[in-house]
Image 1 (cartoon, rainbow, N blue to C red):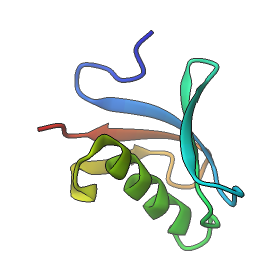
Image 2 (spheres, rainbow, N blue to C red; image 1 turned 90 degrees about the vertical axis):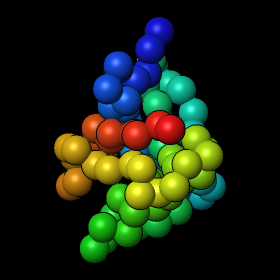
Image 3 (tube, rainbow, N blue to C red; image 1 turned 135 degrees about the horizontal axis):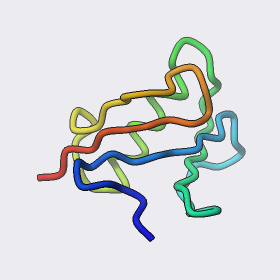
Amino acid sequence: MALADREGRLALRVNPGARSEGLEIADGALLVKVRAQPTDGEANSAVLKLLAKSLGIATSRCRMLRGATGRNKLVQVDLP
C-alpha cells in the first residue's frame, strides 16, 4: 500500500477542530487531525506544519495542490 506517488504527492483526509493533533492511517489514507479551526486557512497551515514536522522537513517543502476548502486534500512533499 502506497500513500504517496513517485512525485511525492500525498492524499490526505483532514479532521479540523480535533481534540488532539496527530497522523494516522485509516482506510488506506492518511488522516490528519489538527486542533485549528477551518477559518482563514488556519487548519490548512496547521496540516502543512504537522506533516512537515512528522517528516522532519521544513514546512516550505510542503505545499497544497488541491483541497484548500475541503477535507480531502492533495499535498506535494519535496523530500531531500
